[in-house]
Image 1: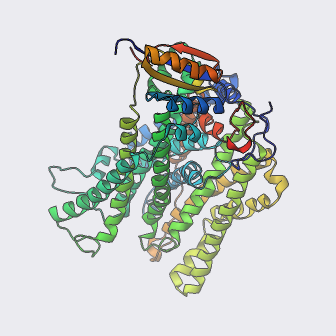
Image 2 (image 1 turned 120 degrees about the vertical axis):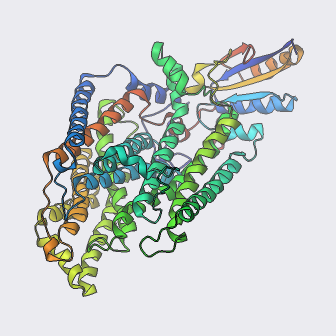
Length: 172
Length: 458
C-alpha cells in the first residue's frame, strides 16, 4: 500500500459533513473517519454505528465487583471467626453494603478501561493531518484509499464545499 | 443565516440567547484560563494561608496528641465528624447534577455541571481528611484497609465505620474518574488553543483526544454507564454516612429516617454550595451568557424542594420523639430545642427551614445577590445541623452521670476553618487549569450550523 494516502476535509456545516460521508460510503470508501466538536448522532448514523461494546466491560466489571465484595467479607470472617454484636459470623445483610460499593467501583473502572481500549486512548503521538478547529466549531472527514481512488474522493468532498482540503496520512 | 434559537431549542434546553456559535463557546470559556486577575491571586493567597493554618493545626495535634481537641467522654465525636459529614454532604449535589440530571436529560445542567463536579471531587478530598484527623493516631489509619497482616486480623465488616471507608473511597475514585473523563474533550479544546508549556500539559492530560467518530461513540456510552453507576452510588454514600449514627442506640441517632434525611440534606447543602461557588465564577470570568437567571432559578427550585424535605424530616423527628412515649427519646429532643445547645438547633432550624421559604418567590429566585446570601445561610445552617446531630445526642445520653458539655478547642476550629481554605485552594486552581464550563456538552444544546435550511432535521 505504498501509494495509499489520505484526504482530510474541514467543513463548516453539519449537513455538508453528513452528506459527504454518505456520498463517500455510497462510492465504496471504507476507511472513513469523522471529526466533531461534540458527540453528533447524525454522523454516527451516517457511518452506521451499532451498540458500543463498552457495556460488556461495565457488566463484567460490575459482576466481578459484587463477587469480590461478598468473597472478601465472607472469607475474612471465616478466616478469623469472631462473634461481633451478636451477629452471625457471616452476616450477609451487612456485607451487601461492601458488595454494593465494590460493584460500583469495579464497574466504573472497567468502563473506563473498556473505553480506553476501544477508542485507542491514550494516543499521545500527534497525527500528521489534523485541524485544531475540530475541537472548536468545525467538522471533519478523513478518508483513505489508493491514489486513483482518492481523486474520486476529492471530487465527492469538494462537492460539499470544504473550508480546507488537505492531503496526507493520519500517522507516518 | 441566523442561528439564534427562538425560545427553547429543538432539544428542549434552557436557551442561551447570547451564545450563537461554537467558536464563541470556546473563546468565552477558554478565556478563563488566560492570565489571572489580581482578585484571583488575592483569593489564592488567602486560601494558601488557610492551608498552612490547617496543616499547622493538624501537625500540632499529631505532636501533642488528641487531647488538644475538646473531645472527651461523653462527647467523643465533635467538630471533626461534623465537618466530615458536612463536606461529604457538599459533594453530593455535584454528582446529582452531573449524573442524575444527566440521566433525566435535565435541560439546565450543561453549563453548571463541570464546576459542580469539581466541587464534588475537592469536597470528598476535604472530607476524607477528617476521619484521619479524628482518629488521632494517624499512623494506625491503614488498619482500616483489609490486607493480610501479621496479626491475622481483618476489619470488622459488620461495622458501619468500615462500610464508610469503602463508601468514601469508592465515591472519591468514581467521582474523580467521572470528572476527568467528562473533561477530556474540553482539555483537548484547550490544547488546540494553548501555546508553550500549557500546550504540553494539555497534550498529555487530554490523552490525545481528537474528537473522532469512534472516540465520541464509545465515550457517549461509557459516560451513560458511569452516570448510571454514580446515581445509586451517590444515594448510597450518604446513607452509609447516616448509618454511622443510626446503627448506634444513642437517642437522637437511632432512627430509620436517617438515610433519606441525610441524602436530602446533602443535596440541599450541595446545591447551596454550587450557588455560592458559581456566582463569583460567573462574575469574574464574564460568563453571564452561559449561566443565566434561568439556571439559577432551576437551582433555587432544587434548593427549595430539598429544604422542604429536610424541614419535614426535622418535624417528623420531633413528632416521633413525642409520639414514641419514650422518656429518653423525648428528653433528647426537648434538650435539643431548649437545652445547652439550643443556639445550634435554632440556627439550624432558621437557616434550613425558614430562610429558604423566600425561594418561593420568583423575584428572589431571579435575583443573584439574594440567592448568594441565602446560599451562605444554608451552608451555615447545614454545618450546624450536623453539629446538632453529633453533639447534642452524645452529651445527654441515658445515664445522668454520663452527661457532659463539649466545647470545641482552638485546634478544632482552626482545622474546620482551614478545611474551607483547603477546598477553596483546589477549586481556585481548577478554575485556571480546566475549562470551568463543559464546552462540548454546551454545544450539544446549541443548534448545529447547517448550510441548507433543513429545519428540525439537524
